[in-house]
Amino acid sequence: MSLLMTIVAVALIAPAAQAQWSIGAPGKREAPAGKHRYIYLVFANPIPGKEAEFNDWYTNTHMGDLVQLPGWMGAQRFRIVTTVQPRPTIAGYGHGYLMIWDLEETEANAALARSEAAIAGGKSRRGAAFNYTPGAGARGTYEAMGPRITRPDGKGPTLPDPSDNRTPRPNRYILMEFANPLPGKDSEFDKAANQGIPGVLALPGWMAVQRFRMADTPGRAPSDKPKYLSLWEAEGTSVQAIHDTWMQALKSGAVKKNAAADESTAEIVYWEPITPHISKEDFVR
Image (cartoon, rainbow, N blue to C red; front, top):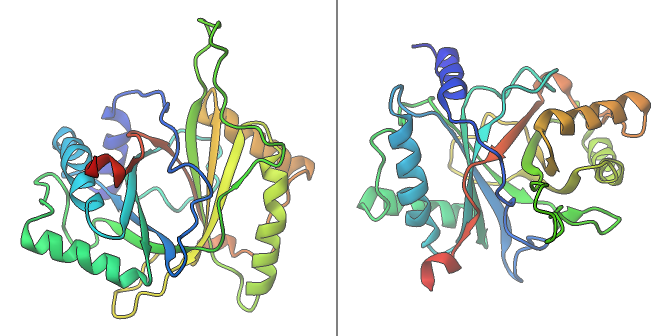
């Protein structure tokens, strides 16, 4: 089975879900003094025909095996959303599942080395349905450039009134916006990315964002993902409704594209949460 066929199969056989889980850890997600805040991203596909085993191992074994390690502060799993039209980019649809690991350390390699040692020693158990074939997955370690930013109007996630027994909670999604600056345009890119945040967070359903840059991990193979990441959090009746709001804002000029971004290398993809965010406290109490 080709990679494309595998991704299509993942999208088709995965059970329909309402993306009800809250996104990530609460608060601003800033590192404590003397440390840096990172996210370690793992994009993966199951071995064909073993999706149920893959999901069971990933959620019920692997998440806890690593979150118990020093510096590994939390984790959450996501499934790709392939139905959005028009897709923001062509690239970024090679994997059906995403794990976001929260790391806090003086430097990223220290935390990553602990996971490698735990896997090699057996403390972190391997999954028989995980595709370990070189090149089958993708990874990247990103350092937070600043705190998580929420809506300027102070509005938090929507919860129906306790007396309302008819209205369900909106679904939650993330948008992973990977981008590279055009050559020689790093400062312009950074300025435009920061200036564009208030406009997007003023849109209905667009709740929060945190910006990241590729972390320095000497001695490790470089990620093939773009250098910068904006991790957006959104809520709505559907991911298409959220996307339509963004597209209409771009069309009207209420939100502007980053003119210093290299669109040819961008990867902009929506994902839905399939587990709650778990933290280290969940495994020490």
